[in-house]
Length: 462
Image (cartoon, rainbow, N blue to C red; front, side, top):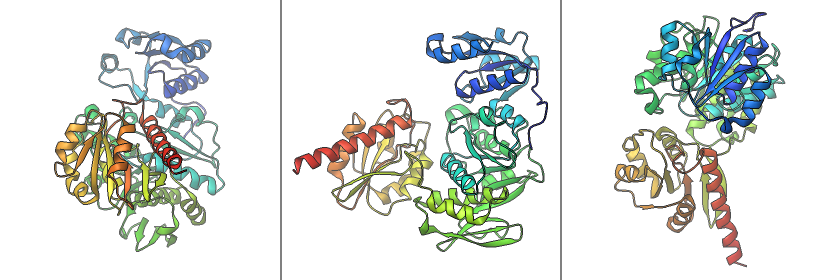
């Protein structure tokens, strides 16, 4: 049990910086526990209309359009939302005054009664937490999937009983301001270059990921990939008990693929979970996601049969290697969630067929040259879109390519360039913000373009 009768933030005079979903949840939880809450947001009042009414009705004072240090007056706690950079003057001034700065996740954790399983990593977080949610429900436990994936931990932490399960997706942005968070089980899937525009270096980024385990004790668990030297070095000083996942027997406790079988070893028990070909999730990266989720589930006492059932039945998430249609013996696959180079690499590794790749968007300082040999091996034709188009074309100069003005144009070009038994893959390797609100909108537009193509083909053949 994490929660106590009186959480450490009881009665705080708190300033909540950023009033999106996690900021609203934090404000409500602080108020519930006797806090005096003020909220600030750089957006204008009209952009936050619904939020404004809700929070003001609860007695929260709100300042709009700025996050000036003057807002710290009379405050003894600062709560920061994930999307707010810690380099802002308001945080520097809070540090100077000795005012603690915490992530919303810390508040939710303080009142949680159920065990918390927290998942971080550059890629695979959302799939792994949703799979853990399915595993928990297959075991008959009330399970909530929270955090960076949608609903804030603070919103539901107190509602889930001790015999339930709280599965939390946690980003490097949230870990930046964690100083006491210690989940029963922490999962680090991988660390590859991403968000370097915010964190500045791989060392800083990787260090933030390792903070998930920094405050754990000897009775808690860390789930980590087998054979990753950087992660091994980062996590060696941690007190928690390691569980391994990967493609070889770790000799210690963990879950791994042996031949075509996902096997486990945990606290003296060992055996097979499922055959890999029984699972619907494609690709070696999803083998890792399944193994990591299974290891975490074992650590919170979920029986092997419930784990196996969920692994067989889980179908994956939208915009992650999602099959859209098959037209003229060509498969169209939506992997819009691939917003960095490593995610693109993992997508390409999932196909043996010739790929026509649609890539591009807003670059996050991605090293596209690093996967040039894989692209040469798997990609027969490239269609680029968005701001990063020229950089990608120059990174893979030997791959035949076209440039498209819109995603719809890219789908049409890809159709014309792809032979039967090939794959048209949207896996951008970039953020979506140059052309779309988010990766979901980008994926939906791709799917709509493919389905429109399907309709026009059917109409032409009548």
